[in-house]
Image (tube, rainbow, N blue to C red; front, side, top):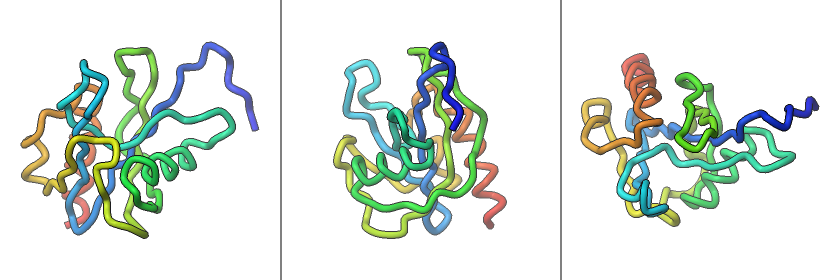
Length: 137
């Protein structure tokens, strides 16, 4: 395994969880400056973890579900804090998503993707998901 340079940005992973043509969106509960914004569930990659292992762990911790990871979607997104977000498609393989760390969860159809105020870093990936959902039809 290659060790990244110490100046490499911290990676945050997100899951574009798709079920029956709908995307799972999660509303942030905290921190205060992000509270109320909508995002892809996920979190920081811990030392020694692969990005996809981190995503599986985060979905279990935040949503109480087990997911199967699909393909990367969208480009790397620079976050306001200097971190980099990478998003993968995913499907639920066990459990029913619950808002364990978020204020609310919503399953959004393609036509509903603009119905929630996405966090700025997530917007470009939302557009990639929109195209992906069209491909699935």
